[in-house]
Image 1: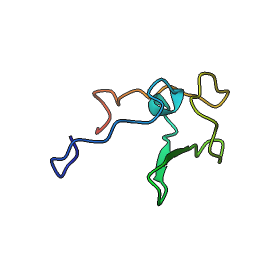
Image 2 (image 1 turned 60 degrees about the vertical axis):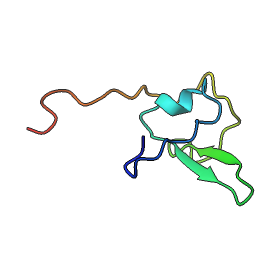
Image 3 (image 1 turned 30 degrees about the vertical axis):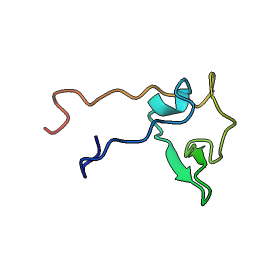
Length: 68
């Protein structure tokens, strides 16, 4: 759920590496409702789904010492 209490729409191309990248991706919705995934590491909109990427770094949640 989002902060407003609404369910998030399903992510496009759920098997894409972009969703779990530490970059993080930016989701851009067109006027027609199409969703594009922008990669800030590559500075482009890669063809989806991305299954291999030289710039991919898996996102990991911060450790317990993150706020210290």
